Image (cartoon, rainbow, N blue to C red; front, top):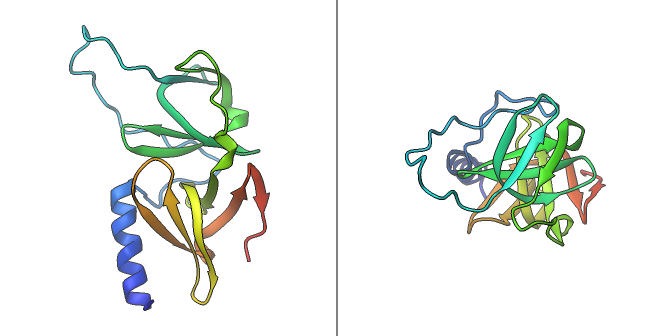
Length: 158
């Protein structure tokens, strides 16, 4: 794959996934504020994560590993450090099984790709990840990757 094609693919995926370069991996980048257009309506089931700072966010925990939860809210995905989480109230009453079966690629800008690593190439050096929550495949250059995880455990980024 040419570098130009790879860059175009990454730019498109970044736009689709709302990836920016302003977040740092140790910080939680807040979700985009969304106003409820129907406060009287019954809200759909969701996981509710309470952070140590008292903030509560509703969405879906789609994966986890030893360091963080992968949280999906209105199409935005965030890596939320486990050390920042006070507790989680699970949508169905208990933690779903298999949250650690997905693989994650944590980018240096703090964003996370979660799903299945379908390509781990050395030439060109990149990861290709099929998302676990949408029919999207995203590529990330290895020089932009901080950490990678498989089966909930960190793996070496080569």
